[in-house]
Length: 87
Image (cartoon, rainbow, N blue to C red; front, side):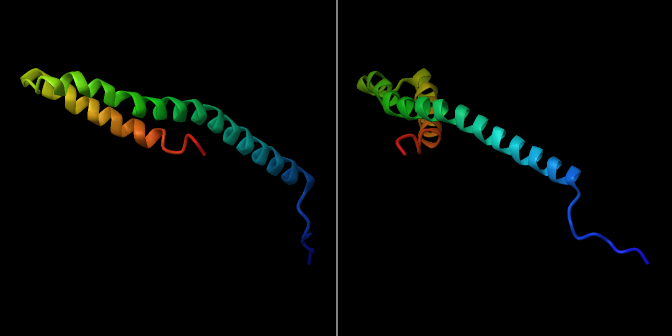
């Protein structure tokens, strides 16, 4: 009978370290991309309602309803994206 070793071979440990390092690099990359997106999302959500005012001032006409609904949808998306900006 052969006895199996309970230790992990060095090759497997080095592969595991590479995987962990790669995961940390991906996590850092996600953070680098997420921060500017949150910034843009937050400030878009703040500024976009000012575009509602000219549309609502004279009342919505038939062609402006689509623009208004689109602005509200973009504002909702910006709110979600920029939600955690100040944290």
